[in-house]
Amino acid sequence: MHINAIYTYLFYFLLIALFVDGALPQLQYLLFGEVILYSVFIKILLLATVLASFFGQLRKETPNHILSWIHNHAIVTMLWAALLIYFGFDWFHLRSKIPTIYYIFSLNAYYYYLLLLPFAIFIRMDVRSVSKYLFIIAVPLSIFGILQYILNEPLAYMGDNESYFEVANWNYFGRLRAFSLFNYSGGFGYFLAILVCFYFHYLIFEKGIRRLPMLLLIVATIFTIYITFTRAAYIAAGMSLLTATLLVIRDKIKYGNHLIKVLPVVYLCISFIIVNEGSFVNVPHSSLLSNVSLLMRYNQWLHVSELWLDKGIANILFGVGLIQNGRFELTKGLIIDNAYLAIGLHVGLIGLILWFLIMWSLWSCLLSLQQRAQDNPVLFCAVAFWSTWMATGVFAITTTIYPIIAMIALPTLRPDLLFPEASTVENRS
Image 1 (cartoon, rainbow, N blue to C red):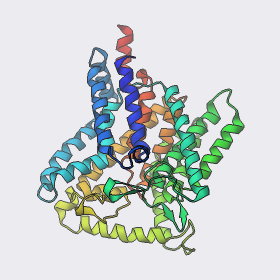
Image 2: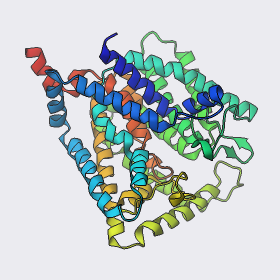
Image 3: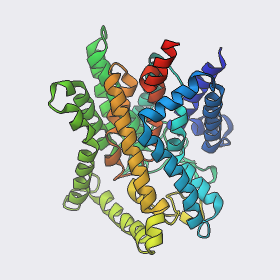
Image 4: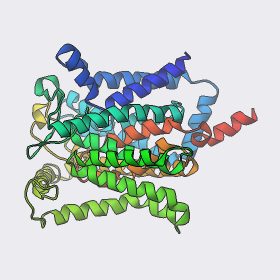
């Protein structure tokens, strides 16, 4: 096997292991009775794999690919570089307030995949292989989640503070939120939302496929999303499926591309309406329409806002360096559950603006690429899910999930789509 193929398969194995973030801890507990290999080691190995692949390909065509990417995506490239420089600058503001190891950990927790993404685009993988692997992992993960719901038992190791692994928020008024092999039900729900759009693409575009079994698979996946009992997952799934439908019919709609491009803003407004109207909903606490969790979030968000905005102009602009993580005494008990407040509290208004602009640029880039590769089911479901990035950020810290999905999808594109000028030069030579 060629060394580049080894890098590629290792890349996807490690990335999926980090995406399905409870799988390796569960396996370790089953084999050894404890978690001995933490996610940070997997991230280090993934970083080494991506960099080894990148530098290993520094032959004639790779510089052309780099120049082609920069030429076609100059804005996102410059924003990515600006964010990286800003993190270094921001450290001078924060170094007297938080330990160095905490700041490094915080960057890893929120921005690891976003910072790694530019190097991952030089990985190449056949879209049919990635599609096959998605089918392979989707079935057992979904079945396991359904079994958890039927038996109302976790059927898995729930973790503890000592092992740095713990399944979060699994109890829903006496019912277990299906989480499968993820760290929390929301992560499982996001995965299922992506799968619904993936199956939807096959239902619409794949020739020779049996429609009824695929339709039943979609229905079963929607039911599995329901049993996560997670509002953010419902919102992500519903909005993703709406975007997927619009992607299919956009050529038949006047200004269809422009409409799809602004969907994240539309979805964000819908999320704000849900948040603002939540206080007027008066239903039993055990109902999925209950406003209890939203009222709890109001208090959390007010507290976080005070930590960030009531500490002077310097902290407003550059942040206070804190993140949501209970492993450090510094932030034990701090609950944020909002991507915008989380990033603002961490790296300030300037960092928040840079992050927002990068995410918007990546969304525009993915949408443009999907328009030229409509037969790619992996990119199709990635774009459908990416349309929700503004909306889900209102209810959870979603800084990692979207770059991961982009890293899974982008390597499946043909080089002539990612690097058009480079491909033209290579064809001429």
